[in-house]
Image 1 (cartoon, rainbow, N blue to C red):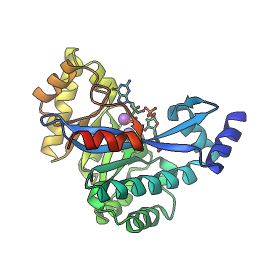
Image 2: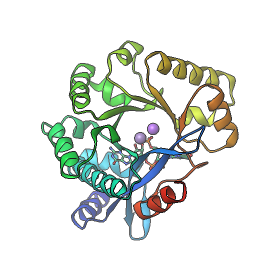
Image 3: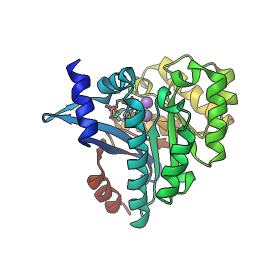
Length: 251
Ligand code: G
Ligand code: G
Ligand code: MN
Ligand code: NA
């Protein structure tokens, strides 16, 4: 497959980039965190991670790419901290990467080399990763928590995670999937979001609503008790240089 060959070349030539999308406290408008999102510019065109991450998984390159994202995100956070603009940085972790034997060691080393406070670092795991093998994943997440690193469950509501597992997972954050936020003005969707926020409150978890694009969505989420959000209404994913300007403008 030509695209896999080109992806391999991009990895070798250091042509992948990590971009960042702010996560805001909805009441104050302050940026409390950022999500690291991979970008690949191939002959001037951006290829979506939704396309190339599955190829990276299929070809096994995801472990190398994921390790690189981890180190890049820590290096960038270290720079933000030196600039007195520390925020929480969340990194998406795929199944293969998460289940590597030395994954915890990778995280520990990346944090130590960049003098990162573990509480400023968050791993985003999708529901489908959890449900792939709940017992093993819960055990791994317990170890992640021992490091003091935060854990978010991504794309919440789109998979099949049973509520009984949710209670056992050592989580800090639930991310409500964009598909729900998009349809929040529909009554039945609003009641699902409302239920998830209530559940999070009872489990003492932070809720981040993804894909907020309109003031109305923000207003409804705020009324339901959601405190944090991410979406084009506030900021699109941006290169690190732009993130520094963005954070600087709001402090
Ligand atoms: O940024 P965008 O919406 O195009 O991202 C599409 C998908 O790619 C998202 O679901 C996101 O979780 C995934 N993704 C982006 N960056 C990474 C990454 O560094 N690692 C993994 N595993 N997935 C990522
Ligand atoms: O990892 P996850 O699946 O949550 O990735 C989030 C994806 O959603 C990223 O690819 C990001 O570019 C995208 N995204 C973030 N905010 C918005 C938004 O407001 N609208 C749309 N359409 N996409 C968004
Ligand atoms: Mn994510
Ligand atoms: Na998501």
